[in-house]
Image 1 (cartoon, rainbow, N blue to C red):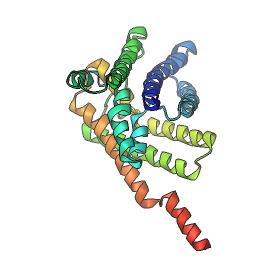
Image 2: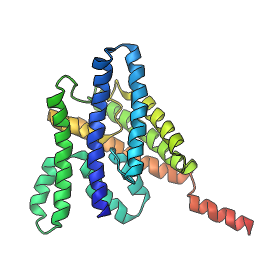
Image 3: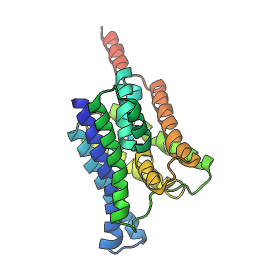
Image 4: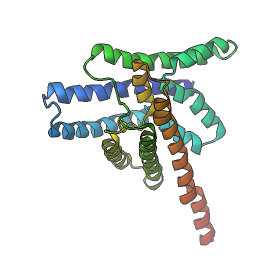
Length: 264
């Protein structure tokens, strides 16, 4: 029951994340009337940081609910095999919204758990519906991030940005595991800086789920460019970051054992 609830939280938070970005953009451009002036970028950045604090609070309240599949994928790779299967098989699909793939798969999974089928299918439909609802409600808001460079530069950009933010997140979880404000502040500012660096190239997304929602709405979610740049590159970068962090930094339990041995 707890895992089903966590999947539902992933769906709700992913839906809210897509909407929050659009609402921030609309608030700055239309409500404040700043258009695309330089000061509009400053206000947008400040609101982005506040938004990150809000979603970090939601993650804390829901005990792990998130809008980014790379977050749960990173923890899954670092955890045990059962946690990995649950993440890859349920939580990440819940955020990606692969509606056609899963609706076909459900036809063949007649003997699987009916509750699991309904939960995954509900999340998949909700993710895609969220983006389409934005396009219908706010037709002038745009169609999400696009690749503005060649496929190799795009993959390198998204991979590098993802590698950096995963390393930062892993480092923060180790060095200051109990400080909510400090961890969220450093993570938010880091994500904002990395997003600005990659915004003109790939959109600086570092979040395959939100890109998938927009790409599905545009109809280019199965192109080679989209799969390589926004799926494979971030996932491989996440794996590389986790493995690099494991090699460079000793586990906390090992350090405690060494300290205990020295004290004895």
